[in-house]
Image 1 (cartoon, rainbow over the protein chains, first blue to last red):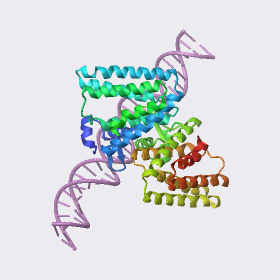
Image 2: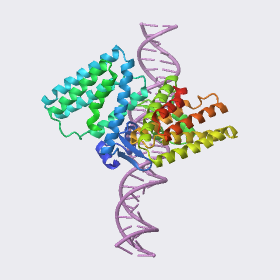
Image 3: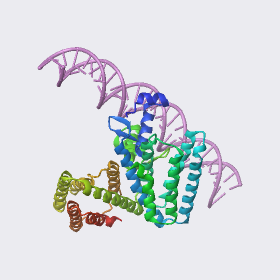
Image 4: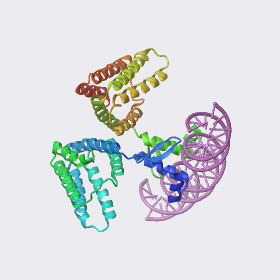
Length: 188
Length: 188
DNA sequence: AATTAAAAGAATTTCGAAATTTTCTAGATT
DNA sequence: AATCTAGAAAATTTCGAAATTCTTTTAATT
């Protein structure tokens, strides 16, 4: 979808130049695409694209978590346990929360932090940074895609996150890779 | 290293705004880094960074070539054979060429095309695009790093490329992954 | 009717300057 | 002598407009 500068300029009340600057920055994360002399457009969403993002995320996350499990120390374990604890707390309260939008914001942020912590002990800054970008693209692609937000959905997610963190802390690489695959397989 | 706008502005004779635009585009490829309110700097080079880029490239190239060998058809084989033929032709003539700079330009371009063709049959546009970026960063990191450009160096490279293309066309995944590892191991 | 050509309109890119922020330098204070 | 502060210099960011390029519309020709 094309991003019309006139409309955005009205919405955000800034000069065309500032818009350009901001959109260009979104390009560096992969949320917006740019073509010379042809302006900006939102990265198109399609079933193929969603599968692509999910598959690539799976590749990076497995690779990163494997290495983290090999070289990560106590500090990594502690950070991971903390991130999971926080995430779990939020996930359990979601069904009871009145403000759906707010709790989703909290959950999204906690989920991101959990998955980034998983791979954070990797020795490859390039992998970590690429994962961050791809995770953002993943969220962009799947926002509003989820039909059912019933309690059964979050029960499943809770179990998946638990399986991941258990395997990671047990340093069981094969189990952890499987758990991550299970977590993402609905999007493949 | 910081990129001083005043100097670049003199060199390229353009407004600060155009510089900003161009540098921002180099960010999207990962050749330049940007920090809010603190301008641009060339991605720093170090032994760790070089190893990181090499390792990540190895991961992506192996993954991409494996999938290409699984689903790539005749068209892929033909493109790969062509790219290798062209590369080989250039590599053989390098010792005899008078203009070192020119032949290196030709070689660099042909090498890039060869490696991109290797993974081009992958079903993941995201992997292909990420590889392109990482390959550029690889070149950026290793430019001027090579000490010895004697004929023995290119003889080794020629053999490595040959091993890669042979294994790829024979659809021998294990051999191809090994060949790619051998090709990059001097940089790990 | 379809295709092409020209002109009008809209969007992109570049420019130079002004406003803001950061960084550097020199002097004062502890 | 070292640290802190104030002022100056430099750099970054934003702005509005001009120049270029692309897109759409309309008219003309085949």
